Image (tube, rainbow, N blue to C red):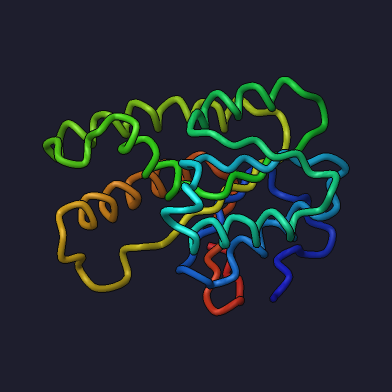
Length: 192
């Protein structure tokens, strides 16, 4: 993986890391915070039902086992609340992985997959506004991971198109409040 740190430059306080599935974005995000004394890993998505989805549970376990032992993990779909709580702790950096699972949990919790696109959009924008305010108000370093889903085939099903479009909006809004955006492709990092 390519290092993005430039010599003598101050590290960005907030970074959004985006890329495709298995691009290396989570590993890159973890490396950005590797030298931090305290890191809170926020996993803002639904808890997997191990019996129903063993593949998803295995992915989560792989992420957990890769984290340093001194990192704390916070799981749950209240991303804005987690960022606000962690912002009150002195010295802890935050890694959010990932915004796609957060978006899924927001829509799932509201039972809104079949609602009108406008209603779901309004719901997500409302929750997203609280997240961006929390990012801006957090005093420490934050690295957020997200998926880049708009580069491929148009999804066949409405839910896939809805998710793709909403995640594109989420990514744009979060990028607006971050100091840097890193695009990861095949393990290579491009600072945008």
